[in-house]
Image (tube, rainbow, N blue to C red; front, top):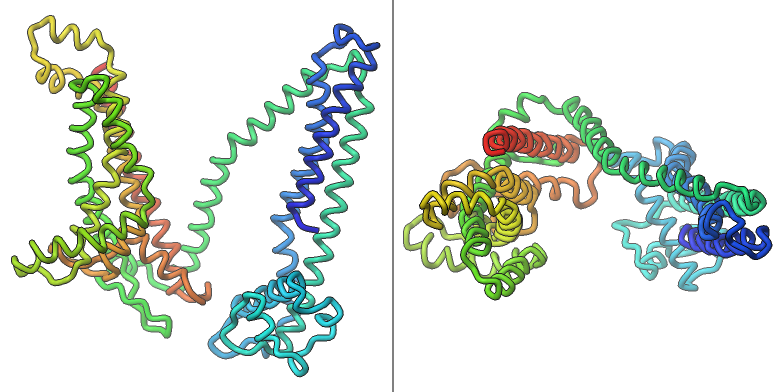
Length: 486
């Protein structure tokens, strides 16, 4: 049974439990809600929570561990002879999953029946054509052993899906019955409901922490595997990036790091002054009418998809810089360049700097302005000598957010700066960044056994360390100046 359908059944049962729990509480009090310890809604909430929460937790755990169990069972069915030269067990498992998914899709579309799938062999059926009609494209014909394993994979997954549905619905029904039976006028439903909700809030607050820990551990684990296959010294100090999936790769991070920092520097050099000046104008000089018009127009830039910015860089900014600056000056002939990506990225970052800086400047107490004016300072002097120093911690935070956004940007760099990993000071040359190479190393039919693929995790961990260092530096600056101006 589909997990979405199971979820719908559990939620529907919990909703019914809320109504029944509320009405039962009133009926046990003789129809007078004043005889209850808690409001009637709390009794319904307890039934809802005890019906839905345990069942959903079991379903989430089941869905997390089910693929691991299935892969463990199916992997034993794949012998070493089934793995072709140049392939790996993980690639064979990917083929098995694709074939099993294609069989399910073909069954749903009515292309084949369950009986035909059970008796299907590569001798009597063009499996590849059938899977193609189901929307599953394979590079080569399906071997008989892969088809057999795929059918077993599909059968195990279907059996476990039905078992999960039965267990989850049974737990939901048990929680429903137990919670309904516990309802009586003296039952402290409010206390139970509030404790349960508090527990849910604690779990929700831990999601961000656990997610961060999971990301770090996954990056560290795969990075350790990479350094077991490729020397760490060459990765950190080599000046060449030349991945070759056939072997003999040179995977130095330095050209990618240089491109990342160069593009980000150009973007911040463009965005920070403009964004800060926009914030100062809107908060200190603009009238309410002008502010109400200009501020939303500036913030619209933050809502434009990055692919649109990439197209703008590719079609407009790149050719403009090439025709009017790079070629006349003899600095390049390509429309893809660091300056192209940096300028367009800077446009994208303007609202990040201006909006946050505007909010920070507006938060500076009016008494500081009045005191400055009382000492005879002009408005511009007040902005320079009082307001900006007092707002500096928040402005640093805005710049940090923009820097993190610039370092992690991908689409604008792909379409504006190109994909060439090189070391150069010429801003009109094409370069690339760490994020672009992470995507390129993980796309396509790649296997996670080669250093050319695992290097993406080492790049990701390096990028994480860089952004963490930026955060630590910004925190130091914020604390230093906050003590000075508070």
